[in-house]
Length: 202
Image (cartoon, rainbow, N blue to C red):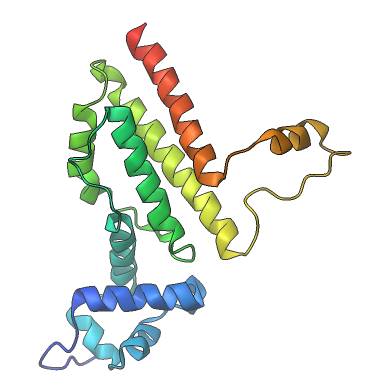
């Protein structure tokens, strides 16, 4: 396929247009042609910046993950800073529930190395447990966000309606909960950190 002599668009603009298409049409409705139409350009223009469809989807995943309000210089303990980072990451994915599954397919871990370096600097001194701590934090955050995004994308509640006659214990637990979904997520992180303290301080 031929390419125009001058680039007509920027990589960032194309990424944002691709995300807009996914937000509106879902991943099934995504194509380079749809992105080109969103930008009012010809599809060959995109090939100045992206080799193929997979590369632009990878860039969308990167864009979502970096679109947070978290700053490395936030005050507080490592636990408090980590909770803020996890909350911001979860919120970033939930802003784009149709695109959230891209994080699994194109997880740009290489982009997170600076964040990992900064994070483990504040972890407890039991260095042999650092990768387990990182694993737990990461999987809690992305697991929770992806489950919530999947429900949101389909217009479903995070927890379906529970029939007390069939599931009496679960119904009672759901009824006793006074936290919203983000607060439940934060509480799960705090419980994880409590376990980390037992393992590293004992």
